[in-house]
Length: 124
Image (tube, rainbow, N blue to C red; front, top):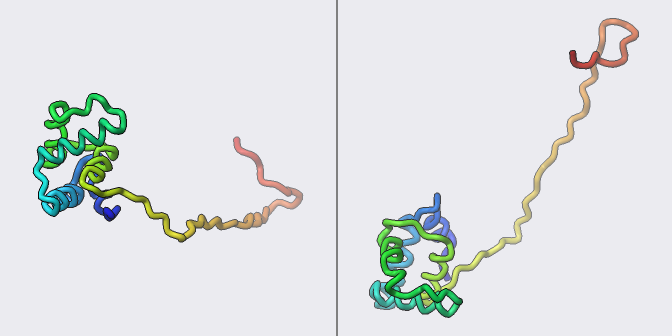
């Protein structure tokens, strides 16, 4: 399973970063897959999900720029690349509850020097 820290690094500021690319390239090396194989797998996956325009010819340049760190990628692209390499991206929610601490402040008593004034004068 892909470490989400790597996915976070991959999409920092909307641009692919070395951490995410490293994960993709390492997996390609593990599987012995060249770029052209990845491109075909990626397009087959996209076509299976209904993207008829995802052909190796149409996606080659954009995908190459992403893999080489020369172009941006969407989260969908990253997820599909991971899936094309036989993986999945998962979100893991931990049992930690996030609490917002609200501090209540008691009103500060105001002592007026002039007798008979019970309230502060309003603005203006």
